[in-house]
Length: 86
Length: 230
Figure (cartoon, chains in turn cyan, red):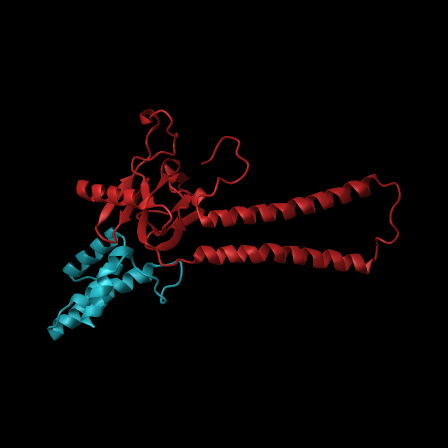
């Protein structure tokens, strides 16, 4: 599993087609990958295991989300007023 | 690019635009055919000395001029839908670029590997070099690799804008808080121009879009240089 995600990450070029978001509107694709990354990190940290598998979500959301959005959400998480449930 | 007293579309720089041009010609041929036929009927009827006694209450001709337009409309609708769904398809893009509309400039983000971000302002008329195009040239072009599928995610930071490049067959609204996806393949190396296509305020006319397609090697050199400079 860990090796799979390593090769997957190495072969990463850009966010691939996601069947959950086949439409023109990709807002939720960006948003849910941002959420997934932080949920994944939280969950794996709680278990005390390696969080490398989460990096996939991070690469996808950095490809998709505008830098200003990520900056805003990071600030909100720091200040504790992030609207998403992580 | 566009030229003075241009009648048709710009030359295609992407496969989708080739399709759109073909469809445009197809639809225009049907329009010409109908116009010629109707023009002939009008002139024939106005100039005729006699009137046809069978033209009134004629069921046959009623059926023909009801069914025939329906067939013509289907002949337009089917290829139109084909291209509509073709344009919607984003197949395994090699690169994702974000185009963000601002009052009044575009900024571009290449974030697949590094965070490369830059603004693209119009070059004012007095600063133009000989041979450059007034109101169309930008200080930083959007550089893309030619013959590669590119995904563009369009959004805006302030008000509505629209990212449009006619030669590539792309026009996508930029809506604050929403990411709109479109895609194109630049058929060959070259420079194509576009303009903001949604009224966005005082300088709406002065935020052009310049896309430069280059071979992949040059794209890599350029992006490495841009990241180094940043």
